[in-house]
Length: 218
Image 1 (cartoon, rainbow, N blue to C red):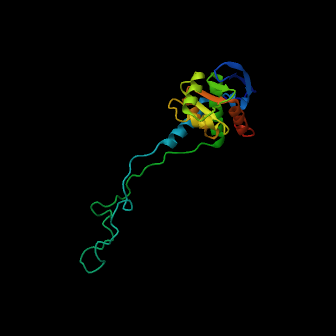
Image 2: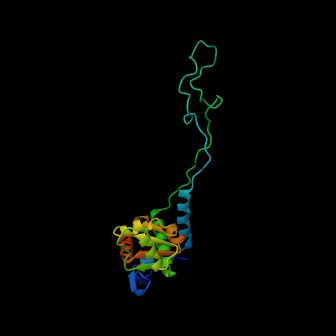
Image 3: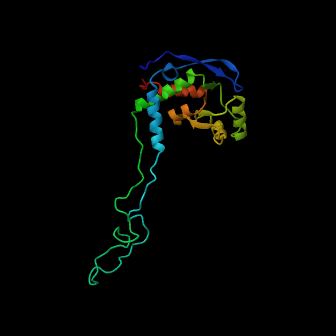
């Protein structure tokens, strides 16, 4: 499917009690894009590869404790010269060319990553799973208050993306096991697609538009 770009789109705007108060017009370059699902797949695959780590490992002579003293003098003993009891040819010595933890991470082009992220955000907006509220504010950075606010919105498994000014909500909601809170700079394709709903305020939506303004996300 060829990727295309649409004009600005309108998404519902809600109050703190999930009552629809109107609509908000957002950039079509970020929230109204269509394109191949394979690009989002590649972005998620890259993120999962970064989290993967090899478990097979052996100790080289430099990783084994002891062996700092020369076992015997260099000459005059009639034995082969030796510098350490941790030599690979000794019992309990190190391993030569043994397996080491493998790095599976790789990077996709930055423009492709941006396109994948805008496709993920557009998918959430198009399917009605992006909840934009007027504000995400708490009087105190308390988990109890954050939980009550999310219950009032009817959210059970949400990704909450917050701007830098919404620190109280970030601190209050970060300990909730059913939800995940991310700063605006940490938004990514995997988390956007992995959670049932995407929650943000109008301030965050505008900050996302500013972040992608002028970037070639096509």
